[in-house]
Length: 111
Image (cartoon, rainbow, N blue to C red; front, side, top):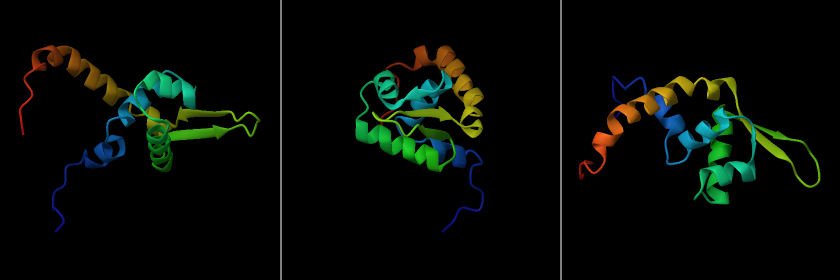
């Protein structure tokens, strides 16, 4: 059964859902990056997981992969215009966290 009135933000949430996608966007907002630099910046993400996240984000039109066809391989990732359009959302989340995050520490509801 399909809900008659879905939340309008559902599409955006599906595009950036998961542990890593928002952080990938954050780092790519700093500028174009190679795969290994992005993996170092993220810290804790496996090669396989990052590759999967980037493929999904590329398929969704958020990330552009540029392969220079060189040996050794040189591949850069950058945000598309659609990916960059998420910057105000990330900024709003940052502002919210600065304001309310400290009060939330240790108060997560079980469930």
